[in-house]
Amino acid sequence: MIAVGSTVWADKETNPPQTPQAEEQKMTLPLQELRAFVEVYERVYHDYVDQVDDKKLLEGAISGMLSSLDPHSAYLPPTDFKEMEEHTRGEFGGLGMEVGMEDGFVKVISPIDDTPAQKAGIKAGDLIIKLGNEPVKGKTLSEAVKIMRGKPGTKITLTVVREGEDGPLKIDLTRAVIKVKSVKQRLLPDGVGYVRISQFQIRTGQDLQNALTTLEKENGVPLNGLVLDLRNNPGGVLNAAVQVSDAFLNDGLIVYTEGRIKNSKMRFEAEEGDLMNGKPIVVLINEGSASASEIVSGALQDQKRAIIVGRTSFGKGSVQTLLQLNNGAAIKVTTARYYTPSGRSIQAEGIEPDVKIDLVKVEKVKPSELGNIKEKDLSGHLENGEAHADKTSDKDKADKDVKQLLDKDYELNEALRIAKTMILAQKMQAK
Image (cartoon, rainbow, N blue to C red):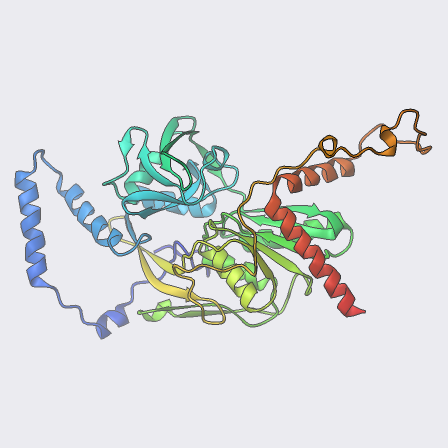
């Protein structure tokens, strides 16, 4: 069992074995099925074309038992268990994407920001059918992940099936040491802050507070509003999702979980201290926003603290408990479903945005293509008469960077527009 302070994990959760429950629910062994298992084991051991190691057969049986339950339950051999711990700390080797299994193939839940997967154009929803020359079909998720991981600098070609494409795509990636910075911030026009959370790690709650403090210093006065970007955020530490939600609430329920065992029933309440002091918040989500991202967006939506914009989220409303075994391995098993404050289960449904932003490709029209002529275009026009500085200030450069960002990111541009509208409405109500 892993214990990290009071942290409870959303995708990698930790709880002790439930011995009281084991006493209440007396387990009876299905003797006929166990005899069938032993018979199959003996047949494979003696009749399979190659000699198979006992350990491999038994680990395969355990892995098959768990993977048959749902896409998120799995057996983690000691090496994979150690890698999962590294992933949660925010530094690990590989391609940089959160994945699951669907119909025997690896499905991309979300690429992680600033990683080989994201830079190569891997998208949420992609189905990986081949890893190099090896077909994915027939492999467990752990086996597939092990192939994708490797020495930094080495290359691998993924063959993916993507909705809307005529045939499979071959995408070349170079493995790297993945160092995930979970929180980034930027100041947008009109005193609106922008905070991007790429995944929920142990320090994400504190990093969010630091990001808001930095933005306020940069703005010189308290922020007028905030855009919280959770697009393609695959989830992570449940406690971090609770802390992020709590940062914008003064009271009320954030999330609760329900399951068969006693320790799977939890409730998380907000405490006094809205860091934005009631200022407007817009939360950006999409089909790659999963798990802990859905906890935050669901809590802020139900508590009417934020407007959720974008597209319907992934729909992972289940909690996994990570239990270490005596041999150094672990099992990740689904133990509960989580619910938003109003009692909604997100499982297989997702969070519906308040304002939908379709996935579109927007291209900016150049002024020359509009055919408009301005005074400065006329021959012999008068100069402005004011002196212009030759050097561009740091602020001008920052403003230019933000403008380029907004020109490229239509969804963020729309979120900013909605935030500005909310700020104006709030100011008018205050008069």
